[in-house]
Structures are given as C-alpha cells and as structure tokens.
Length: 176
Image (cartoon, rainbow, N blue to C red; front, top):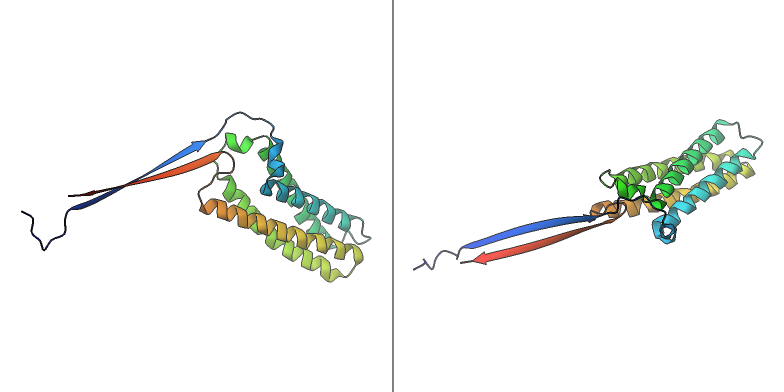
C-alpha cells in the first residue's frame, strides 16, 4: 500500500521530431515573385537602382557622399538581385543546410543602417538630385528594415529559406 503522504509516481517524456521537406532539383518558379519576400526584394532592387541613377545624373556625382551612397546602392542591388535569382531557381532549397535566413537577416539589418547613413548624408548635401536619391534611400531603408524583421521572425520560428520544416512535439505522461 502506498504512503498517502507521498505523491504518486509521475513520468513525463517529450519527443520532438523535425521533418524537412526540400526538393534538390534546380527549377524556375515565378510564384516567389508574388510572395511578400519576393515583392520586397523587387522593391529593394528598384529603389537601389533609382537611387544610384539619381546620384549619377548629378553634376556632383564625384563627391564622397555620392560615392558612398552609390556603393551602398550597388552592393544592395547586386546582393538582393542574386538572392532573388537564387530564390527563383530554388538554389537555396538545394543547399538548405546553409543558414540563408541568418545571412539575409544580417545583411538586411546592416543595409538598413547603411541606408540611414547614406540617405542622411545625401539629404544634407542640399542638391536636387541628392535629395531625390535620399528619398529613395530612405524608402530602401524601410524596405530592408521590414525584410530584416520578417527574416528575424522566420529565424525565431525555426523556418528554412525554402522548402518546409515541420516540428512535431509529442508529450507522454505516465502516472502510477
């Protein structure tokens, strides 16, 4: 007979199973462009290019502020463009073990800060072309910031860049 002063025996076992479903074939899939991250990437590419053009058509494009803005804009243009192509052709899904979301989140966070600095410097220049570039730079800053936020939420929830990852948690309690 069990002692009434002691609780009954209690055992809890928790098992978490993670399943990752990816397709290793490289294929073109235009549906990514209709998703929120795809639209943000297209917006960033366009804003980078327009800001770059605004500085380049200025008579003072050689100024160090313009050069810094153009460096930020072109690096953002090429990185975002390459990432868009990798998503469109499902290359990220083939190499799903690489931390793509972390890489993008860090890049977008850094580019948010760099665009705040570059657009602020361009706006302080006071020239019309630089002011227009600053406007597009601040818009790009918001787009990159929102993308960094989305990537942060995806990293926190354990998602992968492409494909699906499902976590199943089974909790079993045995009481004697």
